[in-house]
Length: 488
Image (tube, rainbow, N blue to C red; front, side, top):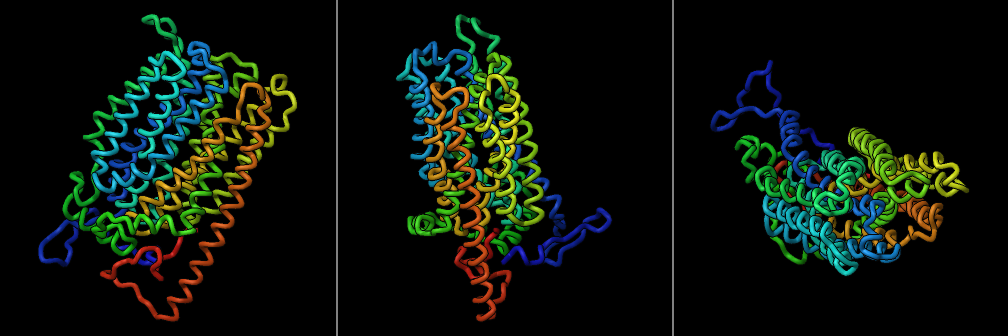
């Protein structure tokens, strides 16, 4: 596997430029400096968009405790139906969005998606009835569906396989950061209740939606295209990225879109394991992000205090997501850290379930939310980076990333119906299903670990029999290539 290869890099001597033995003089490339340059250019840009995405999808939870359901005359179950419709739109349009990305460019597609959902999110603030709420939630899911899988694919065109999981995890940490910011923003914006004759919950949607549109309008200038067209890279840096990726994966191939490569993802059993790994995380992920303000309010706290109390669990989740990503990258393993993190979430839901009277012992249940958040977000980040590391073939990888989100989010569709008002404050069904899903995640990850390890062993034996040797100019033949090793 290419991870075992010596990395091609030339270090500057005493800070000076050295000369390469080529037909013309060229500046030597420091690989670590180049990676820092890529990180500073790529990660903040897409992370801001994902933070806005998660903020715009989950701020409905903050708006609910500020009077959304009362003003729109909807029952608790009708509110849950609106949450479900978001994920219906998300699941349906996930794969088409990634196909469009493959056929266009990230510089065009990612900002365009962001403007679209920013407009939809703003419209949520002027919705006047239940039907409008349903329509807006569906279209919000549709327009947000392409960002995450598109960005994961985007990263795969700049970074080597072993470098991707850390970047994907950092990118995903914007989700927990959005939860922390969302609570603070909702607390502040809710004080605008009555301004211009509008309720505070409407201002939450309007202001956050407008902010998304404004940021997206500038995103056309700070989102870059693929390396060969990135104007922030010199010709030498483009060549260096091309060479380092060429020995590592298929990212440098000029692969034209065709439906046969799409079908490769649908017929690979390993892709479905990645999908199940996220499916078992999506239910606890979205039930926590969509219902945490309600869960805390039902412990006996006021709406304003509940908004602020959502911040600490998300802050802890952000810290642990980044920490697990760093350690996982250095060790070169996914599965053990997913299992460890999911175990923290399991502890959290056990605490939530076993507190017999949450309103009289709110501190116990609140502590459970810390464990739940600390387990959910790091595991989800690592699960979502798995296909980016392990699926080869550009179209196959783009499709696999979209499949993972689409099939995975079916768990979120179910989760939106599990926290019904009648089950407050213990929410035995919701917490129980989240616990069951996190236990299932451990099982799925163990199976995936075993399957990938077995496949690596098979390839090692076959490679030894055939005496294959990697050469720099030899093209990769997808993840079926005998030299390809899966990250476990």
